[in-house]
Image (cartoon, rainbow, N blue to C red; front, top):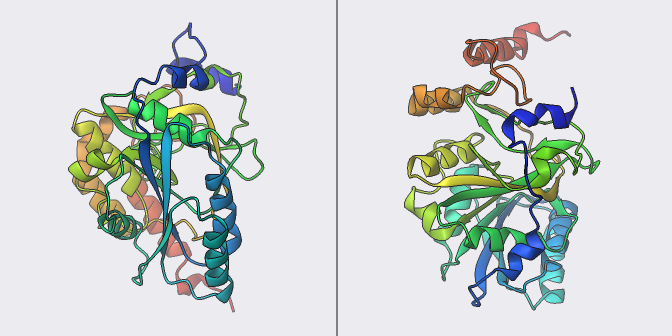
Length: 325
């Protein structure tokens, strides 16, 4: 089954293609919207530089951009020299480096960054340093769409792997697999497929690129700092939905995500137990998505993914007793 067939069940049968350029011409607010991009990083300057190079090239017709880099225990001289040189070259955009010398905790680091802001922005854009851009209009498209949605929670877009043709993220499906799954992950991106014709309301978006108003982020209590390594993006989106807000994805807006080139992805068993204890049966709201794979399809089995068993098996396989000499 091809991607266009798989997404058919999630789309209307007749749709008009969304045109972000036309949408910008409808912008009634003549005041530029302020956006602070928050990028945590630890060394690997070549990745952060690529991300920043894409940001400073973004058009700012309706947007005023500032960048807050959060240095979480970098130690390489190349990183410090690279940051200083980049700031010197790009003085036209406010770029600030904030030191956060704590153990890695995605939620704490980003919350710490928001609390450090001297001036509130209209929007916050949480962005991984291992992301890069194809278009110079991504910022404008994000901001224009977000400013026109009265009940916007979080806003994301389509993320592709580094090959620029394979889907890494379309949206997050809560309660699928261990905590949440990425429908369409691993499928080839086909811009003419029905799913990519217009923005979609979805359950949740990934924290690798999460755009949200400052007011809404703070009103729901920011990221949950008990979720240091995973699921904090999903948890945030669920809280936004509880408040009556809608999470969206700009399906035809593309960002490249060089996943796993920074910190390795891992699930912490205590965080998974905490997440399920916190949300419980509310996750069953999304049962129309398969509980067993990453492709959006009708639910054929009533079974939940055995996440607790999966974690025990994973821990058993990685135990020292199984290591060979």
